[in-house]
Structures are given as C-alpha cells and as structure tokens.
Length: 224
Image 1 (tube, one colour):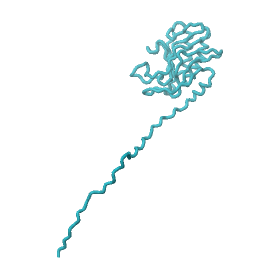
Image 2 (image 1 turned 135 degrees about the vertical axis):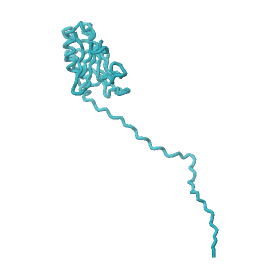
Image 3 (image 1 turned 60 degrees about the vertical axis):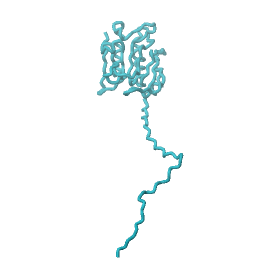
Image 4 (image 1 turned 90 degrees about the vertical axis):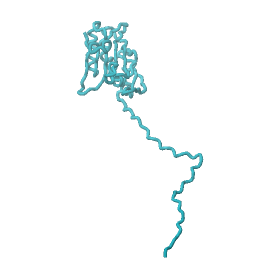
C-alpha cells in the first residue's frame, strides 16, 4: 500500500544577525608600522673639532636636500686661531663636515699662515663657500658635488694684516706664496682644483676630501 505524507514548507535562508546599535562605529584599523629613520653615526672628528684650541666653530643642525644632499653632523667653521693667538676668520663662515673643518684648520694653522708670514701675517681667509646642494660645476649632467655633502670648500684668497689681498686668480702677483699653497694643499686634501684645471675654477681654489679607489688624488692648479 502506498503511503503519502505532506512535506512541511522549509525556509532555506540563513538567520541574520541583529542590526548594529546606532552610534557604534566600526573597529579602528590597525595603524601601519612607521618607518624609522636611521640614526646618524657619530662623527669622531666632531669631538676633536670642538676640543681643538685652534678652531672656532659652532654646532649646526643636520641639513638635507634632494638626491643625496646633506650633512648629518655639520659645523660652521668661523675662524682659526694661530700660534700667536691671532684669530683668522673665514669670510663667510663655512658650513661643512667636521673632518673637513679639522683639515682646514690644520692647513691654515700649519701651512698657510707660515707661508704668508714674510708678507706681514695672515688676517682673513676669503670666499669660503662650503655646503651647497648641487652637481659638479652646477651642471645637471654631472655627478653630485662634494659641496653637496659638506665635504668641499672654495677659497678666493687671503687678506694680509696690512689689508692687502692675495687672490687665487692673480697668479703673477705672489707666485712663491701660491706655489707653497699648492704644495701644502695637495699634500693635505684629496682634490685640489685651481686656475688652469678647468674654466669653472679659474677664479678660486677648490679643496675637498673625496675618497677614491686606491687612494687616488687630484691636484690640478697651474701656478706661474
């Protein structure tokens, strides 16, 4: 005998959660991890510079710029104190790295001042252009200048104690002094570029501490 039964109507939809109470906001999103800036490695030259009795410097805040420009621990080099106590200012003061400030101080104290002593003594260093965020020779096609790292200074000349000037561009006026200046600069710095090296350095002397492979140095300055 066939049996029949009536199937109950079923609801296949899943039960819905109760509505969210008014005023209840969605959970806050987990904040993204913040990028941590690397801590600049302390420059051991800075401690020596601030302890030196032959340098007058001021600490400066870190500087930065595009494409690798900047100095993590700069100083403003204001003057060098000579052996006789004379203060020789840099005009203008130069924003540079500590190791370059140290090298410049030693050069002026030990080499430049004695070389000019027969002329009456050293009074000022002229045209000390240091940090500048730019490429070499201000050309877009060149690599980043050492000036952009605070690792270079351009010098225009010196002033004597009697007010006379000896400028880098005036080659014939004091050839013996300029020859001594060149020899001492090339012994202390990694790069020396003066008149005769290229048109960009016809009127001033560029010195820097750029490290190159095999300790290679550049010394190009025609002193007549």
